[in-house]
Amino acid sequence: MADKLFYLGESYERQERENFHNVKRKKTQVGLGDKQVEDQSDIESTMSIINDEEIKEQMNYFDQFKAPNKKLHGSKQKKNHQNFAVRLHYASQIQIHDFLLRQDLEILNDSSYMVSARPSGVRYLVTSSNGKTTSRNSSGYLTHQFESNLPNGSKGNTDEKVQFQMKSNKRNCSALDCIYVEKEETFYIIDLICWDEMIYTDFPFCSRILFLQQKFHDIPKPISQKYKFKLLEYQPCNTNSFLQAYFGQALTPYVNNEESMKLPALFEISLDEDKILLDLKDQASYINSHYMKLLKVIEEQNLERIEHNKALIDVSYAINLMQRYAFEPKTSDIFLKDGIMFSHLENPYEKGLNTLVLHWRDEKISQFCKNDDEDDLQGYIGAVLKLNDNFEFVTLDEEILKVQLDPYSQEQVAGMNPGNLYNLKIKINILQIIDVHSNQKSQELIITELIIQKRTSKLFPDHLSKIISKWLQLNNQYITASEIVQSIENNQEPLFSISTKSISSNDKVKSGQVSQTNSNDTNCMEMELDL
Image 1 (spheres, rainbow, N blue to C red):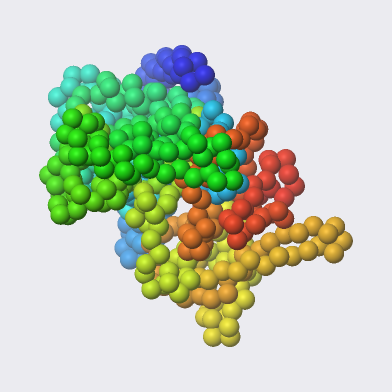
Image 2 (spheres, rainbow, N blue to C red):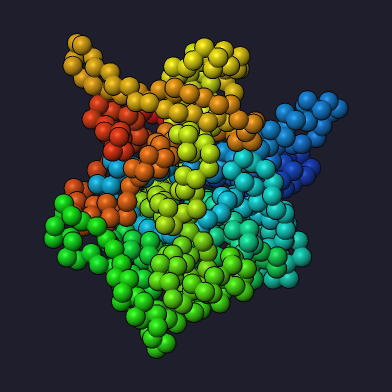
């Protein structure tokens, strides 16, 4: 299926490129008065000549990767407003990943999902245009500016083909969705938005990844002299690929799960620690070779301090290191994990929340799953929420979290400005509601305690599944790796539709079961962001 989509996409891309260049050739031959039309300066006049609406839309799309005009006319307030507009412009391009909840488990056995370990780092939008390459974080702040071999990403590129493209078409650009790992100074490319003159947002995910692999292979190396660029590897979602992403390739052969699968009630994956310890002592074994190289690379790259007194005798210490790092011994590629990503093969690249890309983590493969600070111990959850006109807090996906607070906290909320985002520490309860007419049950999230934190730099509130995921983690009820493997192995239902999550009548919140509605359900939420 992926191959078929790739060839269809390749054909579509070739046709679009031909159409685009044909239109450009026509443009340069059309006289407006005594002068000819040029690519940039007379673009508005030229648009009235082109009849192809699809080409118009494609050309306009590239303008969104250029910041709004920042010419200032005096006041600091106007400058701040324009800076905010620039940040919002870039931040709104980045796709937001949903968090895996228990109602999503039944879809993971579907053959249309890909799986990959997620690097522990910061999401960035990397763009190249006008002879420079820049990166901006999810809050829209400019973080890096450098030269690269990405399309039109360097003024000093000596590659003749690239120089010709820059001179002949200044509109060449690229936009990549990346995770930046600061210690390694590496951008891990997780998705493709556009490349050269081609937009890929409407292509299915499998085609975008195949296109990206091809482009990445053809581009001159290194892509940048200052930063490294690497492609994130995805595998079809099955038990083996999930275990490889979770445990790593060295530990996966030691997983004891075959016998337990025969007894679903007792199902739990585990590692044969005795055999691991025995093989670690055997210098001829694969796991010994893998582990020794891992220790060496961790020390060389100064990723963390190795406790040598434990490294070779404490099997738990060795397992912890091998599981937390995604490591390829042949290339010495390594990154610290922050959970696992599940991406649907056919999902388009969407601005805002995309429920077809799911993020899951636990305390073994993510440093963000430890309930060890003071607020966690007191039962608080960190959340960025928007205050509406009714003084209720709203999530990114428009779910309302009502408030039932003490008088002092109510006074604090009353002093807030509706429409603003607030960085909060909250405690939540679940209120069950029964409709006396239909006898239907529903549940609401209620904020019972609230602490206002320092001002947030974020531009969008958190989504519901992120808040619920934190609540499950805080109460030690997060989804386990065993549950995911069991779901992949046992579920037989095909995937028909996926819609935005909402809290429904059959939820068992204490076990983390927050259900998902069908697209034709009247209770289904429609996510429309007014940015």
